[in-house]
Image 1 (cartoon, rainbow, N blue to C red):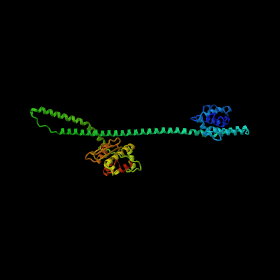
Image 2 (spheres, helix red, strand yellow):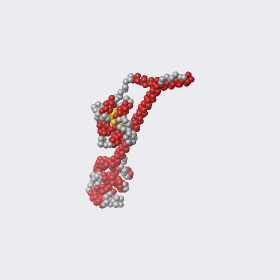
Image 3 (spheres, helix red, strand yellow):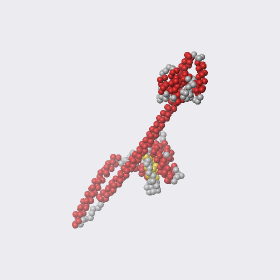
Image 4 (cartoon, helix red, strand yellow):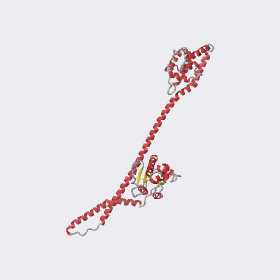
Length: 410
């Protein structure tokens, strides 16, 4: 409502509302962040009382800022602002007529009221405004702003948490890849040692055969020189073969002597106190360890998914083991019967190793060979319910987990 519409109401009738406006602006500037207010109110912050000449200026200033005027109207209580002032702040349609009636009544009562009483009443209103309204209303104004800032901070923290979880997942994936690379390197090392042993055996056989070769028949006088040269060449070849074999054979002999020809046994993984070896708790503890886990594939699948086809059983077990490797970092190898199965090698899995027994060999023997092939300082866990496999691998120092215990943690 502009000044022309409210011209019927004199400035002096709005004193309580104008004083209230100055008080609210003075307290609002102390907040962080400050409550917006018309800058023209600042010179009146430290005034003990508004002069009559300043009332019109303040009125025009507040009427020129509808947002501030609306905020004042929301906090104007009857004990702080009189009826005329609240009508003016609300700026409702037809407020000036109601205010004129109230102003006429007030002017008629002014003659009967002592000036000191009016001043005392104004001071009480001022004190009440400082003690109650400023605290409560200023906090109310800032509540939504503070809540919004806290919501933004929470969103930022959630984003940082999600990013941290992604980094942790990437690190775990890289760790699993490194473990698989180490496993493959060990396989290549074992293959190289086996090849070297085969070559050594072949050279030894050749040397033995050369030494046992019978002497040549008596040469004819005409070709004696040729026969002697051939015999000399054979002896030279035998000496070269013996020289090549002398170093590795000596090393092998010295190694066996140092060991005293006693086999080195593998030590099973010790379980925590109170954990039963056939329980799901033991299966989870061993899956989280650094042990190599060998799974008797069909022994587990026929117990876990007996109504499915063999192909669907294999898929179900491999998917579950992939998830287990992601959760616990398990280094696992699943062994199935029959390398001739159509599609047996179709899946290329990154986290677990899948082995199919060659033709004429059962998965049980593959598991036994895997346990014996692994170094004795490497812990091994075999998952099966086959009593014969359990007996053999325990003799080699491996831990045994029943198939149903593994199924309980998948």
